[in-house]
Length: 172
Image 1 (spheres, rainbow, N blue to C red):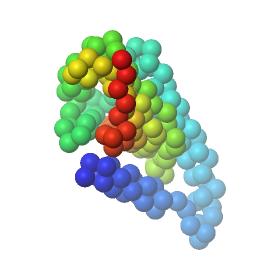
Image 2 (cartoon, one colour; image 1 turned 90 degrees about the horizontal axis):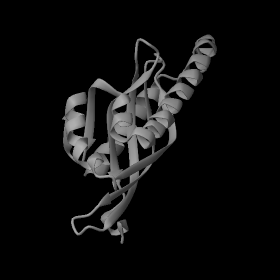
Image 3 (spheres, rainbow, N blue to C red; image 1 turned 135 degrees about the vertical axis):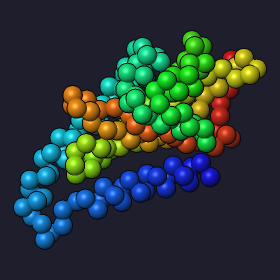
């Protein structure tokens, strides 16, 4: 069900973005909006890559740097709303030095307005299990971004779906 919800959200965003593409009856509009869309897409893709790098370098503080004040973090049916709620939700995980989250954006899109976009990709997680072993999981994510007044991009929604549990690996 969680995977379906994520896919439904991604599909709605993709359809909405596709609906904003110029049609052959609008060639002048296509010529004027295409460079902005391409530039904005490269900006949001770079923001996601920088978000991943900042998180690797500064862990939770790097993560929080990219959160909008009104961010919604969806973690398996539990939603944390607002920057402080997100920090509270993630602090226990990130407090353990064995916790590691990495991701790679595969692609993204930006709405014609140039101020909202989304990226998706694959994530990898390494975290301690209750028995002390390290658990490795993988999955896919979707992140929705909003361009700020200063030109930076901030996360307004983040969620993902894990690969089925049969794929979980335990290490010593």
